[in-house]
Image 1 (cartoon, rainbow, N blue to C red):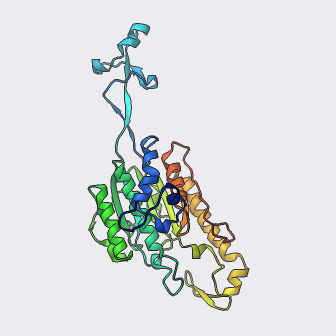
Image 2: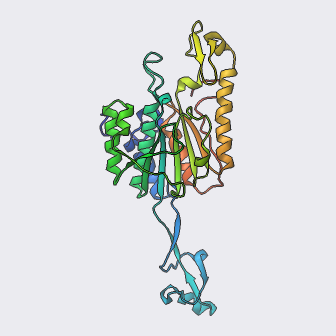
Image 3: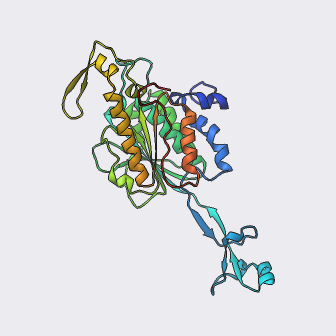
Length: 327
């Protein structure tokens, strides 16, 4: 049951639904049970704790002067005549920092473009808050930062003491129809320290800077959730007789039929996303591209990939092919 929306989604429906139906509860129902019995869904770090373990021989080491006698494995000493210390490594809560873009490009598309397509700001907010709720529910410390696209570093943060705080933030967004102001309520000005944090998520459309900021790439475990509208990775909706403008570098005008018939636009989108993915891979990060029509299971698949111990690299969950046919 999803609070605040009046919707009821069972497990199967939750997986098949698109990100426009994502709620913190749906995320928790799909991911939380598996996270409890598998490697933690985050960058939780392992810490050697001063308690004995009888079941983990791989954690044994030779006794050193000053070690507590209670840590000695006396059974091993009786067998080998060697003093061995056995420690159990347990997980400690991680500091998870989620950086959310707060830029004008997220307010596209508007109702003049498409009535049935949600704005990117809504999808970004749904993903960010649901992810924050999931980490907080697992016991992590979560910081939700806003980046305005102008300053070098994020400067405002939403601080939450409990998972319920993120649920309240989600309800506020729904009530305000995901306006920019609703997401900014409750934020405080803070200094973003680059030497903190164990896992970092960047969530946005990347149109304010085109490339991943260098400072983000230097953080521990950077993960980019690249959110685009399905209209940005498809050209079939374009009017053949209308004109479309590109003001990214200098104003250029394209006829709708050219954009639909030629493949240069879709090739440019694919090349851009592939470049972002390669950059993350070189820095040992993770990347996924999603749209409002991506399934919730695609997001869950990416997060499960991030949570598993694997060689650092990327995973690309396809939401459309390079030619623009949205799945």
